[in-house]
Length: 446
Ligand code: ADP
Ligand code: MG
Image (cartoon, rainbow, N blue to C red):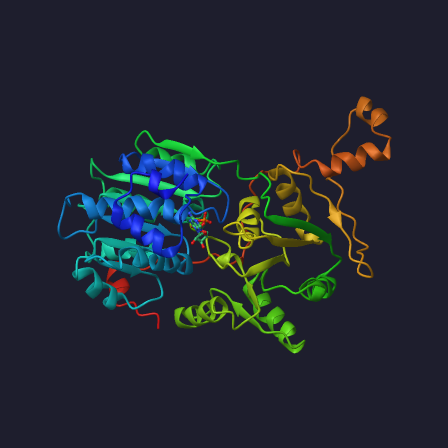
């Protein structure tokens, strides 16, 4: 479908034309008409399929063409789970509204609170931000949402994983306007934890789901390699990075400490590598993302802080040095490549510590998953057996066959809970601040 076939305001049509976007992606073609009708939406489609414009275009159209409910309060609020993603959405929004007398504010944790108070006093029609800091502004009475017309949650499921549910409740209650329209977007919106959020935030939502979240992403070639230990993983990493000419590479690790360590290791090999983790100040985080975004660094070593939403079109290889604990996160991590029709590769190392995650990912992915090998770097580790159960006599006699056992080792259905909790010390992005309102107002992270 062409954008010109959608009932979009001509000013938006013009902006898309300048950008060279003629054809709407599937999620855009399906979601935009409902969004323009004012319906609540819960929409999912694979990573890199253009969800941002699917919510930004209707949001800007609403502000351009409809009378505001309030001249003071923001009309559109967009929430994202990480500061980096919120900033990226903000930049796309700025591009869309650049020719109009419209204002947008970016409200992130880790940035100066009082500067944000000042920005909010200018009555921006759009606010983009992370849930923790937005909630702090509500508590501090520097932000009111009584006039809010549209609430958009990008990567809503991740916000819940990060423990933002109280902040989301607070935001929902502050913007409890009868006419409010709400929309949620992600590549993974079918998990049970979201049920409460959709029930409380959305009114008779239209569900749009292009494909299923575990379905094969045709543009991403995915491989799994067995690994014995960290040293073995390091050798595999070097091999993968040098295997061919990759434009840019993202390496995901389980811990913040490992980002720095691995990045240094790659630098020692003469590679341009940089580490990003939540330990850094917001200024450092911004610099790193802009260096990587501009292509000054070849490799970004990071945690799940960069797994969601980031649109880096030159990333041709994603390496899971450690597997994520949640299968959903696997989908998002590998989705940092193969975006907007480009081809990409993803390779995941599976050691003994990754085995449980591997089984849950394998269960989640609705596609063939098998192990590849690298010549000279074959692992001795061949996988773990499932924990022994007390067997009945009948089972004992039928289960003598070793091949039957091997088969059951592959099936994850009885390998414990479907969604494994993130482990302690795992990167968790932009957690809400646990401080009293007074202190929050004085907060100044940098
Ligand atoms: P998602 O949120 O689904 O992961 P994004 O919204 O980040 O995907 O979009 C991925 C990339 O596709 C971006 O670089 C964006 O500019 C580009 N894009 C979005 N819509 C279109 C379109 N209709 N035609 C061409 N490119 C598009
Ligand atoms: Mg997105």
